[in-house]
Length: 126
Image (tube, rainbow, N blue to C red; front, side, top):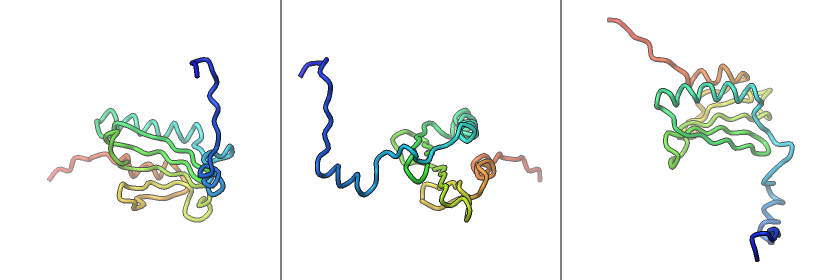
């Protein structure tokens, strides 16, 4: 096989079974819109400048989209910002999930959900 030969990909029996259970890529899957990504990346930029966050990952799955935030790239995510349109009418499509798996905030508006991550310290005088 030379460098100019095309790479032929074939599916094995395991891949066919996995594809039947849950598709790896859905062309009409859930994703963040441009406005939503602007809000998330604005918060991310402020946290990186403060030295709190260092890396992120975006997963666009069939039923939800996830923006994961990391303190270091080799660790588990500190927070996950999840968009799940199935929950839009009930609890709200957006949620912030902590590293422990607990839902920190859930709501219908991404801006209101992100406020829980953007708390600023206030000086209290005694």
